[in-house]
Length: 229
Image (cartoon, one colour):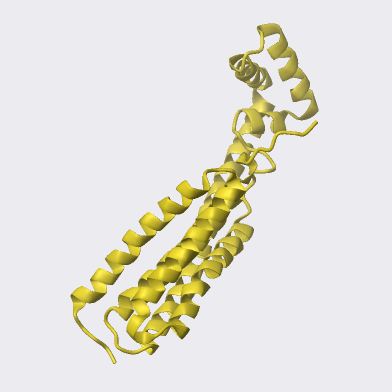
């Protein structure tokens, strides 16, 4: 018998990886297009793409580290508070756990039995999972999240950077936009495939919003009306 395939367990890392890669593609391409729109030479475009790549990766890593660290601090404080409550008012906590199971559909007698057995096994673990929604799979890892976020940004941003190195200068904006659209479409397809969602829908959505982002940035470059080089 073949087991059902579920994708919800991938949502955390998949969201971070896709977000980082797409942000790398879009941010680096948009910066490069904006500079290319106001430049006749390659050097400013390459420099802008490289600066955007490095700055974006560091920003993503730092932001993810701070965000996940804050989440970790909150969970640690919640667990410490819960442990104190279990030590000072175990009966109240036991009834709280029983009420949670009752809301899930168990009858009153069974909810109390389940709550008592889980409390004997590991009271803090039971309350962490069922009352606070904290488990070992969702436990925040700030450094891991920061490295993964920075690496995924680089994996996306390095692609438009290479385009800025080799694309014809007089067609730089077109090449950057064209390749970025292809990269975004592939990213959307991979994310949809990994997440078990509609591939075409995902590709259209990401390319549509990517086009808007790059178009606005190119417009800013043209509006300045200053050609460097």
